[in-house]
Length: 130
Image (cartoon, rainbow, N blue to C red; front, side, top):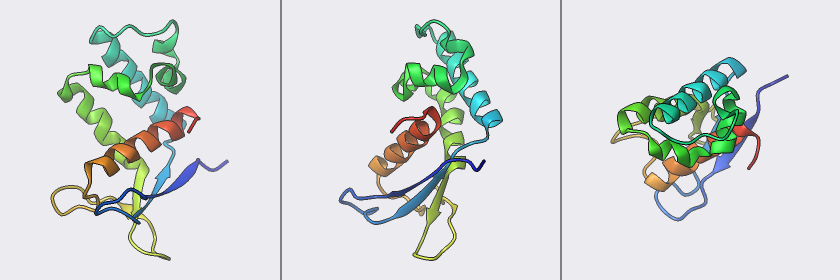
C-alpha cells in the first residue's frame, strides 16, 4: 500500500499565497523512530506523558500533541523539527514534479506561518487526524 500524501495549497495572505506543497508520510520505521526519540526527549525534560505513551510511537505522540515539543530545549528539538522537512516537497508550478524545499534566506518559504502550518500538516498526517 502506498504511503499517505496530502497536497497543501497555501491560502493565507502573504508572500507564500498560492504555493503548493506535497506532504508524504514517513516509512513506519522512520516514523516510529522519530516519535520514540521525541517521547524520550520529553520524558527526559520532565514532561508528564500519559500512561503507555512512551512505548506507543506515533500513537503516543498523538496523545501528547505536537505542542509538547515546545517543552524541549531548542538543541534537542531542532533535529526532530528538521527531520520533518523530509516529508515536505515544493511544487513550483502546475505540471512540475515536486522537489525538496529550498531552505534559507533565498528558500521557497517566505512566511513563518507557512513553515508552522506545514509542520502541523506533517504531524497530523502521521498521527491520523486532520
